[in-house]
Amino acid sequence: MHKPTTADMQKIYEMLPRANVIDTGWSKVTVLGWFRTHNPIVEVRDEYALLRVEYDDKGINISPLATSPEAYKAAVTELESMGFDSLRGANAWQAEILKEMGYEVTLDRNASEYLYLPEDLIELKGQKFHSKRNFINRFDAEYTFRPYTSGDYDGLMKLLCMWSYRHIDNGVRFCEQEGWIKYKDLEKVEVDEEILVLDGVVKDLKGYNCYADVLVVNDEIVGFAAGETMPNGIGALYFEKANIDYRGIYPLLDNLFCKAHFGEVKYINKQEDMGIEGLRKSKLSYNPVAMAERYTAVKK
Figure 1 (cartoon, rainbow, N blue to C red):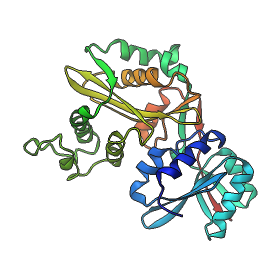
Figure 2: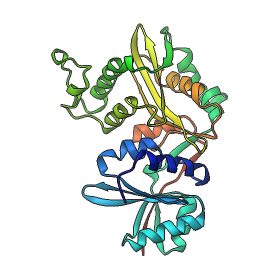
Figure 3: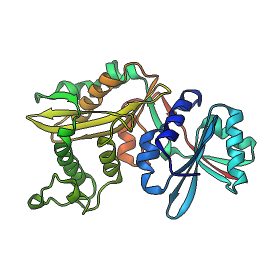
């Protein structure tokens, strides 16, 4: 196994439409972004791919990507031949195969991802979306919603610094003298890992297969969203950050982004809630139609 290359990710993306998965575990943002500091290594075969990462000096095997049940069994058998007996991130059909192969399987609710119908988040019809429509209708600032450009970087970093200050227990301190919008200064304080991943993505949107947009009020970036349409027809919404001084900005940003990019997808995937109560409440408020369940598995 080796560090993932561009060629590896190309093969993985070619495999995705045949792999019967609806989560984002094998997206470029996950493998090259979220896992980048966890020493990811891969092995890509014709019909399956293996992925291993490290957390707290412990190796973790991600459930293989496979184009069929037979290929999945072959992938798990290869991992077992290496001496591995546990997996994370298996989906529902993979979990059934793992049970047959002698694994004890447990649902990981905190890691399971939320799925929405695109027409629901785009049209916001019916009583269940009444509050979202109200928030959007009451948004009274004149705004521009447009694609992100490299010239927006400093404005985005300013928004992220403000977001960090409010969301990470006030562990971030303003430093106007040093130039708060300079990212090198942001790295001197405790920063949510999500922002570090986001920084890498916006610097290489094409490489991550992503698109990004900004919401601008009075020439200031007050909202940002980024995601991708995966090769299997899943619209993945990876990042949403906004200035909450503007009431209703998150429903507006979410609706605008989904309208712009997800009209033709099968599902919109907003990823997991990590067991965070506020995040779970927010994701549930958009009325998911299903969960992309994830399971952990250990050989009995």
